[in-house]
Amino acid sequence: MESQTTRMTLARALKLKNRLVESLRKTEENIKEFNCIAASAIVVVDINEELAKRNKLSKQIISLKDQIAQANIPILPKLIELPELKASIAFLKAIPTNNGKMYSNSRWSSATELLDYQSQLQKKDIDVMITDCESKIDDMQESLDNYNSLTNITVVL
Image (cartoon, rainbow, N blue to C red):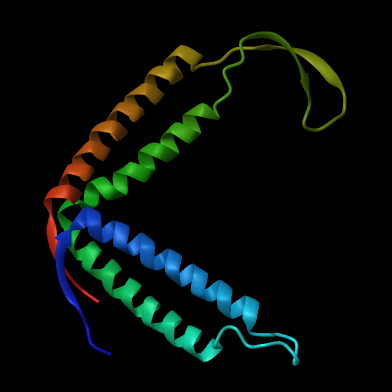
C-alpha cells in the first residue's frame, strides 16, 4: 500500500475528511447489506474487497484526523469554546420566563392550581445573552474559516 502526499489548505483537508467518512459509511452499508444473501443469488459485492476498502478508509481517516488535529493546535481554545457557546444558547433558550398568574400542573399531583410566577431573568435579558453568544460564535467562526483557508498542511494518506 503506497502512501500519497498532497499539500492542501486545512479547509480542503476537512472536506476530504468528510468525503472519506461518507465513503466509509457507504462501504459499511454494502458490507451489512450484501454479507448475507440467498444461496442462489448472484454475488454482486465481494465482501472481502469491501472489508479491505473499509480498513484502508479507516486508516486514512485516522491519519487525516491526526494531521488536522496537529494543524489545529494554535486554534484549539476556539475549537473548545465554540460548542460551549452553542450549548449556552441551548441552555438559555430553555430557561422559563413566566411572569404573572398562570395555571400550573403540579409535578406531584394531578391538580391544577393558579400560581403567581416571577422570573428573576426576564425574556429580554435572556435574549441579550443569546445575542451576545451568537455574536461571539459568528466572530469565532469567521476567524476559524480564515484560519482554515489560509493554513496549508501536507496530507499523507
